[in-house]
Length: 550
Image (tube, rainbow, N blue to C red):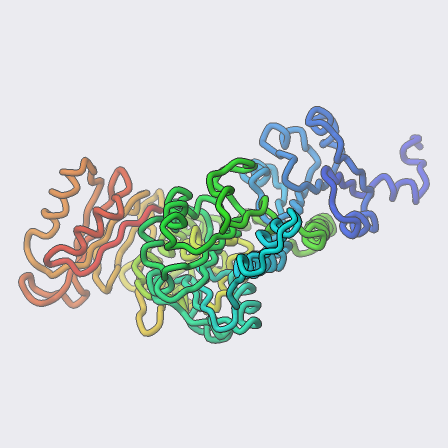
């Protein structure tokens, strides 16, 4: 018998106990939870070199925002099974590299939503009552009661741009102050607005026209960057007060400064900035601007909550439980890979196209219909891919394959999955319908050929067949000769090369020159600028148009 095999039972059990490294400081509750189940080491003071040398000894690691787990570092983590991020984002983790190595990455997405909402309310009250200015005046030896007279929140209108978790919490608290609340977010169902007693704005312009205070809770995307610019501010009520506890780039600083100078904006409260950290900024010198150094998520409770929630995810991953906030998911089971795998990109693309064509002010329902042999499988993964297409880049929360259904539920969006094992004309078909109020938009697609290329087969009730590329533009138009040529000419004048094009009529067929409609789908080498697509769609003979980057 070898020395190794002669070890006592308890010693063997101790040696096999999973090891977890807590690489940054978290709350005591999270540390205590992990110590109940694992051998835990604290390495908050380790250098990157030390981490590289020792990370191979651990089954799990828990970090905050300072530790960068890039591909090079993960290459040393030969034993690592889970990464817990004590916070909302995972920007400091190479998720793709972790997924390739089979490492679960989980965060704490709910840890700071209450804190962010409360900080918004703190700034709202401070802005209304000039609290920081009055404090500074009094502590400097002045008694200026009349100078700092403020306004009540009672019966004022709060406009919320972005109605996700934080926006909804702000709405609940503002209504407690007797405020009227109006919100704009087309990716929330009308029913959810009704449940919270919040007016649903049909457009951001409608919100600007009535809001006394405006608070931003939007994600930062190419579409939302610079959202609050001179054009938007010009549509606001005179004296409106602006709050931003979301992302700095949502506001165009120069435009806000000019609006403050003119009196169009009566005051602003900012917790986030385009570049951080920042200690010198033109807006810092305005008497009616309140600033805080990105404190939206900074409370003892949020920090402790983030650490504990991340620890719970590490515990679940290492003990075989359900990791509810994983931002990556295991690969499709081998037995379903051949059938479901090729439909993943198609489903996400159909979701993006369907929501782009839906023109309502809310999303109430998403229905995914599977026809053919694909319907014989567990299609929940594909439904989630559709949701990722629908919600991606449109929510303040980071949406992934794990949390997409929960985020849809929070926004009051009904998800319906329908299966039929037969499909007319094609082996498999996937139909995605997005309902907004009384209007439903449906798109249909399939995969074709040995390489399973995704194809779009229907939009706006018109049938055609075009292979999906990265950039696709669709137009609905009167079924008249020369319409496709007009679009091609405009694209050519703007240096946009067409990859492929297809046109289609209603399924029962309508002759050219009638009052019927037709649709065209055009794929291009580059994205078609929104302004160009809108200009074509508003020209004679066209009814609608939309460009989508997949």
